[in-house]
Length: 211
Length: 326
Image (cartoon, rainbow over all chains, first blue to last red; front, side):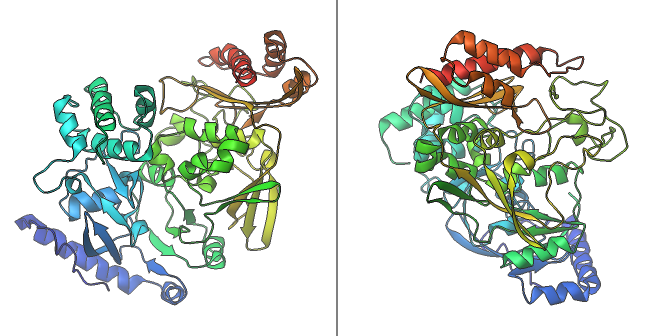
C-alpha cells in the first residue's frame, strides 16, 4: 500500500475531528486491499498504473514549481486534491460540472477545468494555480490589472478569471474585446464584471508586458 | 461520485481487453463528459480505463487524407494549420463548441462519445429511456424546448450535443475503431444512431471497441464554408440549432454542396435532399431559401420546440449566404 508521504511542502492543519477521518480512511484502504481480487493484482504486472476501489495510488506532480509525491484515491478530482489535500484553496469550486470556470488552473501551461479531471490522470504534469503566478510579493501583471480596472465584485470567480486571462493572452486570443469575450466565455461572473475584466485583459495585452 | 478502480494501460490491446471483459468498465480520455455524468449519478462505472498514454494523439496528412488521432485535443485540432487551411469548416465548428478550457481537455474520440444534454437524461429522479430503458421519456409531454425535430421516436427525442460531429458528418469523415475482434472503419453517417426503440445506444460501437482515429478525405470545401450556431447566449452554450454549410462554387455555379445540422436530431443530421437541390444552381438567396425549405419538410415538432422549424429554415439560409460570401 502506498505510504502517506504527501503534503510535505504544504502546511497541513489537522483538527481533532480529522483524526477520526484518517482512521476511517486508513481502515477502508486496508479493507480494500484485503478485498482486491487476484485478477487485479495480476493485471498490475502488465499495466502502467492501477488502483483498486478505495485504494490510493502514488502520484507525482509539480505544483507551482514544487515537486510533490502524493497518494490519492482514483475518484479525487484535481480540484479536490488542490483544495482539500493541499490547502490550495485559491482555486474555487463553483459548479463542479465544468460550466463556470471558477476552478481554472494551468496544466503544462494549458488552462483546464480542474473539476472535470481526475488527479491521477495528471501524473507527471506541472500544475499552476492562482497561488503560483505572483513573483513573491509582486503581483502578476494580470492581477495588477484586475485591481486597477475593478475586474471583480464578490471575487469568487476571480482566481479562475485570472488564470484563464493569463492563458488567453499567452494563446494569442486577446487581440480585441470581441475575441477576449469569446475566449473568456468559459468563465462566468455572476456579479457581471465582464466589461472591467475585458478592460483589464486589453490593458495587459496592449501594455506588452510578458505574462 | 461512485467509487471505482482505475487502470492506465500501456498498450491498446490491454485497454481494449480491460473494457471488453468487464461490463462495468469504461474508457476515459478527457473526462469532461464522463466525470460530469458520474458526479450526477447518471453513469456509475466500476472501473475506469485511462487511455491517455496510448499513442493516438497525432494529426497528420496521409496523401489526400487527413488522419486525426482519437486523443488529439479539440483545441489542437481547431488550431492546426492544415485543418484551418484545408478543413476550415471543422475548425469553425470546434471553436463554436464549449470553452477553451474544455477544448484543452476534450479529445476528438471523446467528443464523438458525448451523451445528450437532455435535462431528463441528467435528472436521475425522472424517467428516461436512454438512461434507464423502458422507464419512459420525461421530455415527451415535459419541457422539450431543446429537443429534436428530425428522426425522433416515441422512446426518445433527445439531441446529440456536438458541434465537431456536425462538421465531420458534412465532410464525410470515417471513424477508425479497434476492438477485441480487430479493426474496422465506420462511415461517419453510420456511427451515431437514431433513437428508435433503443435510445440507450448512442452509436454502433461494439463491446470493447475503441475509437482510434478519424479520417477526412481531401475535398473542395476550403473556401466557401460557414458554421452557424444559434444558442441562448452569445457563447459557451449548447446549440438550439446549428448549421454546417460547405459549397464548391465555380463561375457562379454550385458544383456541390454539403449541409448538416446540430441540435435537431439524435445524431448529426445531414440534409442530403437540400444538397442535391443546390447542385448546379447559382449561389443566390432564393436558391438557398428553396434548399432550406426542402430541408425542413420532414420536421416534426413538440409543444415547446415548434420555433426550431422556422429557426432552422432561417439558419440554413443564413449559413449558406455566409458561406457563399466569404
